[in-house]
Amino acid sequence: MPDEQQKVGVDIPADEIEVVQASAEERQPHGEAAPVPEPSEVEVPRALAQEIRRAMKRYPQKRSAAIPALWAVQRRYGWCTPKGIEQAATVMGVTPGYLESVASFYDLFRLEPEGEHQVLVCTNISCWLRGADDLLKAFKEAAGSGGEGEQPADDGASEDGKVFVRGFECLGACDLAPMASIDERYYGPLEESDAEAALEQLRTKKDVLPEKRLQDRGAAGGARGSGDKRLSQHPVNKGSRTEPKGKS
Image (cartoon, rainbow, N blue to C red; front, side, top):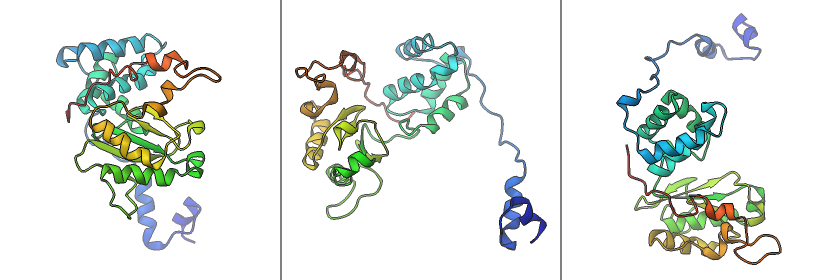
């Protein structure tokens, strides 16, 4: 066995040894990382800056506010735009690269525009056992991202680009199985027939499946609407989500 194979501890074909050696070499960075933006050079919307500053006050270290800051950016622009990330970095006093590294780690942050409305269908075991695959297919067909009789792709935007549908590993609501997150609200248990109704209501700006919305479910043993008031009082559920403004 050649010395190179002994170093990595596996039997590698001779013609691939150079590739292994190259992967271990130190690479020079391509250019300098962007510095912390100068507040005087970046215009930040007042409402966005205030929301980020409120989040920063909740943590002993400002970097800990990265996730709520990115949520604020995504709610405002529809996705984590380069401009929005730069604005958040300006307020927080960190580099845009730091915030982008956080955003790229979590599935729920979007670094590219994916439609005005987001539908995430849970496909983990509880939902899968109750028909999540068929529910996901129904949503994709209703959105126009998959033809009838065909298995749609894993991710798909509607033909008009307004709705983006994809399966999601777990949304942590097994008691609602099968369920979906529609514009950051939880709905369930859902049936295949709910998919077309939900997307029609989204497009016409009507109340989406109010009878299956988690925020309106009653507390255990309580009347409908007696659930945790923190859900209904959250900005997302108050309908304060700003319409996406397109690419930045």
